[in-house]
Length: 347
Image (cartoon, rainbow, N blue to C red; front, side):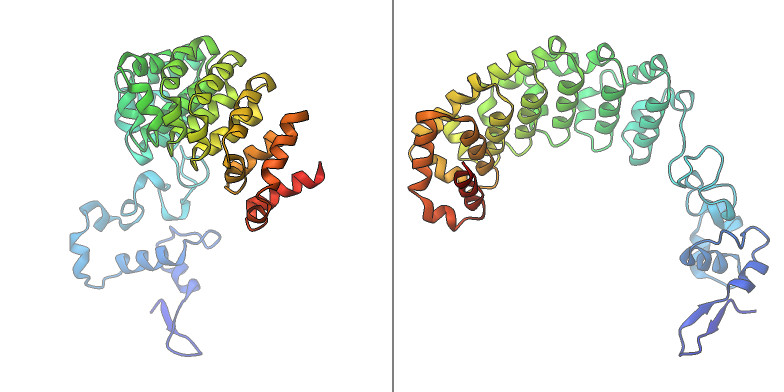
């Protein structure tokens, strides 16, 4: 009997579910049918039809088309148990991994798309000491892991799950190679590792890392990835670190404020620095002719200007207001400038 019938409205094939369930060797439950593409594939592979491409399939797939053809790691033991196999997370996708299952293969698996998920899950569900044993296998590979699109997630998971002292080997490997910390802050994956370390390590532990990064704060503020590291430090750093950052940013505050990435750092600084540290930066910006108005018309810069207006008082506020009103026509023509005008009008 054909599984496909001619539709009443034309030649479109309709899948006959009732006949399919009767002839599927009892392995597919009517209560939990497979998706249509999977059913169709199963039917063709299980039929006696001569398929020229079937000879190119692995032998195990020819003898038992499903689930081996689609990857036994992702499915249960039979097609009717898709997503319900023992040792799976209940979503039908990710195998649940234990520390014992990945021991000796942590670095190898961390470099794979599926393997890194297994390692992350094992770290998350294992006792602290077991997770530490797994992380020990990453020692000597930290710099390489930071550049890996998969392994970087394993490092992040360990930093956020482990005790701060257990992440010390990551900091050490970063700092042992001259320039590695600065390079990591500029890398699209490495910058994430630096941010997690700043967030989860106490100030005394991350101090050397932050000092290394601040050596080139001006350039990092204008970098597409480095700017996120500096913003993270402004949000999570200790007061002493924030004061040091204000000092470093003040050296190049004009050029930083004129940059699309740098203006985001300036905006973050204005909202996270103490008034005593923020006011000198605001004063420098005010003294640069036309800079405040230029910032008021940019995506991130206008946020910094709003913070400045909210923080300034007395003569400094009057000077900022006059500087902006002198260029009111340009501000009204700008989407971001109009937001700044609303702050002026509300004052």
